[in-house]
Length: 146
Image 1: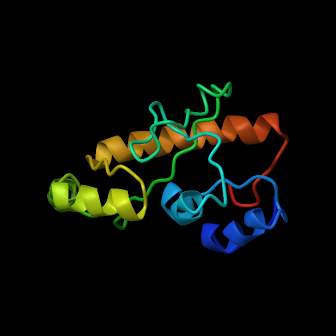
Image 2: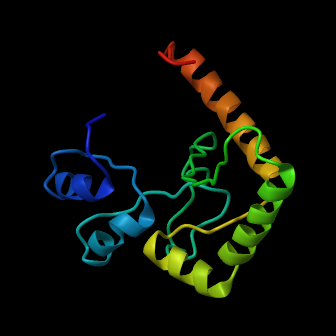
């Protein structure tokens, strides 16, 4: 692993062969891809990405266990009334599922917005933590802050 502040800082490194592999957001790499300066080998997720329909998923490329997806979530302090959380979640979900937001978000970040309830997010976080916990234990990697 080579430390970079983000994908945009790492793009020049892959273009000049300072690194041979880069995992970054599609939106970050798209200008270099369109210019023919990089090649996308695979995309995460269950389906091919709409912006890269000819690029296989990691599963299709022979890596069925590679299922990494970037995500953002909205959080509130513990003890926030459920009614307030549900109201905000409903409004945010409506917004992120609107065609205008989905199109802009998909173009800039090349990510598909999902939206959902706080219960769905809690289940996702629990699943993600368990999944990465198994990976870390298998690699004998310990976290300083459990």
